[in-house]
Image (cartoon, rainbow, N blue to C red; front, top):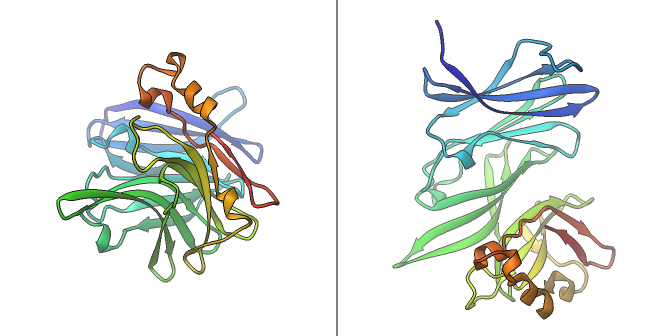
Length: 273
């Protein structure tokens, strides 16, 4: 059987003195995108036959492609799902791959019925070492004649098949682009930009925030002085963001994306974007 295969994209990682290559190929015969992994020699040649790690439909949107990231314990996480707008029990697939190209853990997560029919955007997803998976999602649901969007952390216990949602609510504004990490106690640190509840400038951020979530209790917990939870953007910086050299539109001028979160001993935080 001769398959029509087109190489779409590839990326490489260096783990434990091994150069690991991931290749996304378009299988035109079966209308699938396929992800393969194999080793590279130091001269750039292929070392072994490729191993298939996952497939998705060719109709998937570009943003719903295979996503490969490094984990805190020096392994690789693969995440993918079928494209959806209104969620309809599409599985969210996670695979943890070690430097021997072995899949150590696989999770196929189907969100509870309460999310069916909602517009669900997965912003970040991370497994933990305690059979938990943490998901940060933007969820838009219809309430009456209006659509309401909320930012939420969803904690999934794989052994118990249990889900707990912790909404990320702010007293000073609306959470915008956000991410999460973990502190040394294993708590979830959610941080990002926040916008004013009403604003004349579309998409404008007025500050940054952070919240700490205890995954065991499934709730937000206090840490340090409440004043450290927020950092309003200074007026001169806010005005500078609106300069033409930062973009022609407010969307371009405020096109900041979170990159990292670091906590300080006094309860403050450093947020990099």
